[in-house]
Amino acid sequence: MTDFLFAPPPVPGLPVVGSAQRFPVRTIYAFTGTYGPNRPEPSVFTKSTQSLAANGATVPMPPRTALFEPEIELVVAIGAPARDIANARGARDAVFGYAVGLDLTRRDLQRAARNAGQPWDMAKTFEGASPIGALHRAGDVGHLERGTITLDVNGGRAQTGDLEEMSWSPLNLVALLSKYVTLQPGDLIFTGTPSGEVQLRPGDSLLGQIEGLTDLRVAIGAALA
Ligand code: MN
Image 1 (cartoon, rainbow, N blue to C red):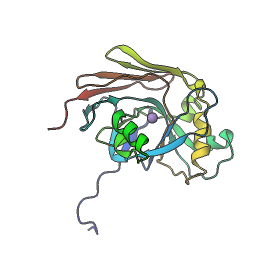
Image 2 (cartoon, rainbow, N blue to C red):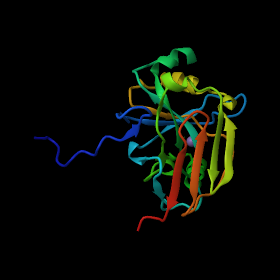
Image 3 (cartoon, protein in one colour):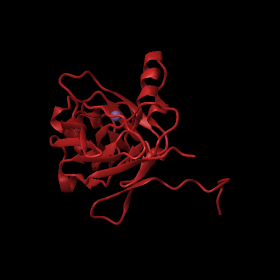
Image 4 (cartoon, helix red, strand yellow):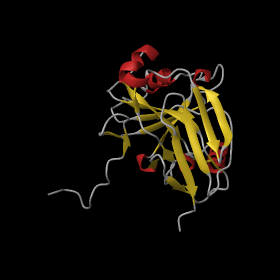
C-alpha cells in the first residue's frame, strides 16, 4: 500500500569498494574555482541526483550544445551529519570516502548564462551529466590531499593536475559548505577541476584517474532520438 500516485523513482546510489552495499545519494554539490594559487572563496552549485551515471556508462550526447566539455574531479562523499565545521581537521569526521567523478558541462550554455547573469543549471544538469566511480572509504585510502588527477580522451591527455594544487583542499571545501547547509549522509561534493579543456563528441572514450582510487571510464554516445 502506498500514498504515492505512481512508483517513486529508485534512490540513486554508488558502489562502495569492499562492500556489497551501495551508498545512497542525497544531494550533489559542486565547487568551481578551487585549483591554482590564492583562489578566493569558491562558489558552489548543485547537480540533480538524476544526472548520476555509473562507471562504464555511455552518456548520450546532450541536446542544445555546440561545446560539450568534461571536468575531471575528486568527489567527496559525506557519511555523517555536520554543520558549521570550523576547519579541515574538523571536516574529517563528516567524510565517508572519495571517488573519481566527471562534471560534464555544456560549456557554451554555461558561458552564455554567466555573461547574462543568469542561472547555469542547464549547463550542468542533463542525462548522464554526473558520472562517478566506486567510493573508497576514507578509512581505507585516508583523506586525499595530494596525488595526480588526470583525464584522457581517446588516449590523449586532456587534463592533468595534482590535488595539492588546490587552494581549497577537499576537507576545507567540506568545512566551507557546512557553513551554508547542514551536510547529511548521502551528500556528494564535486571539488573542482584542474586546467585543460577538450571538446567531447559522440564516440569519444574518457578515462579519469586519481592516484589511489578506482579509474572512471565513460563513453559518449549518440544524441537521444
Ligand atoms: Mn566542475
